[in-house]
Length: 173
Image (cartoon, rainbow, N blue to C red; front, side):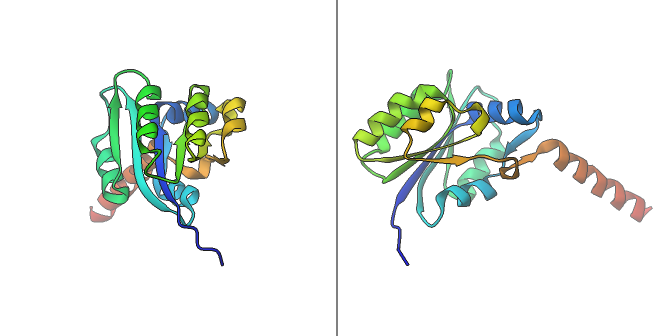
């Protein structure tokens, strides 16, 4: 058995991933299930950093709390798109980690991938295949596909919760 000792940073372009999930699956309530996805893409490697970049001010405090509690991760609000802040952070981390996994299918990250690889960093892309730029896939060292099983829907969670509350009320009456 081979012991893999890699330190990994996961950098997430939240807007890109959310938009891709909604576009491909037609469900505006669909979100990443980090409990499924993170272990799947990490394998037996160690997580050094997890940062979720998201444009806008309406960022769920529950998401931030959960990422911090479960993965010592953080959420970074971005003024416009996540491209520049994510790229700066990836460049800053390049000398500290072995692998960077970028959750985005945006071709704007091609130059970043090329640069990181020239610095000796392994670069993996994790995205929704149907919305991922082919040129980004060509440059990456490895690709992880985000499937519907890696997600959950707020709508179905809310429906299940409402059913449980309704059943409890009926039972108690």
